[in-house]
Length: 172
Image 1 (cartoon, rainbow, N blue to C red):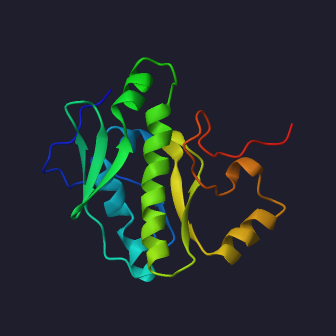
Image 2 (cartoon, rainbow, N blue to C red):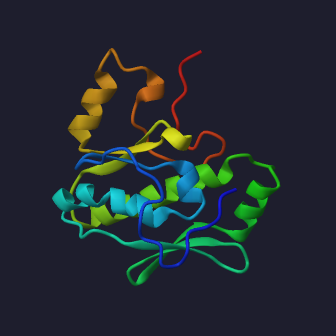
């Protein structure tokens, strides 16, 4: 496991794929390891058209093990001590990768909903390839109806349900 970023870290630790006003890279491993601030920096262009000021965040791993992110005056819980222990013990492999991304997007979607806009943050893929799309309901519907898009490539709402965290499965 890579080391956590220093408290003053604001720079991206590696070159991330290009972000836009409708998409950004959100590597699940980076999020789980405390690089939430880097992902929020990549998401800044997506916040502007939604009427949300850019968010700066700093991950914090408490002595008891809980993972939280401080965003302005708010603290967003991302993982409890018990969840981190289950992840470390491999009782639920990949738990941290899925939960942190799911909970971060839930917080972001709550921010957007508070503005009255219908846009929402959706995941595409997962793991190191995870990306986020910012879509309106008509955009999401058009993508889901497109015959050429495989179910595994569709945008989805993240959930806390291990092991797929909302990732759609192809029909059997």
